[in-house]
Amino acid sequence: MTTLKKFGIKDESLRNGYLTLVNAYKRKIHMQIYPMITNVLIRERDSQVETSSKGELYTHSPGDIFKIFLEVFEVILKQPMKEVILGVLEVIHEVFSQYLRALYQMITMDRTLTFDYLVALCNNFGKFSDQIELLVEPLSQKKDLSREELEAAFDQRVIQKHFGKIISKII
Image (cartoon, rainbow, N blue to C red; front, side, top):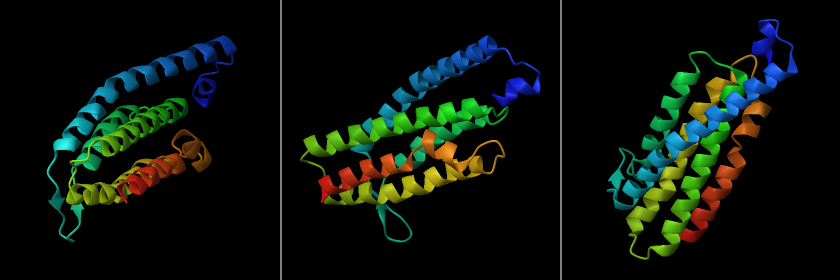
């Protein structure tokens, strides 16, 4: 709440109003990006497997998903406020977890997925991990955001757990 204190506002009702607005913004962001992520999942099922210059198989979903996430961050980083950044990170974490749960269900239910496609999904997890670090690392450089606060908002261990569950299903 340091943003309001900068302006000399100490009234708790204003702080509560500010937090209410932050929560409303989180809901709005969730409602906006969830359909986009759902579309990525739909396209993912029918996407072509491609080969990187290193010979690894992959699909474009990691890049597509993080383009959406980065667009959200471009807006909030113009006037960064700690509570908004952490709130948006929580939303991104939840939407990403929903995507991974849906991906797991797709793998479980669809027996027609090719071996190359399943290998590409496994390789995508490395790309997701790299993208997550690119998203979170610059935020940890901000003086009013601690690594612990960022990890509480976007717990990478939960994401890794989802990845592990999907990989174990594939194997």
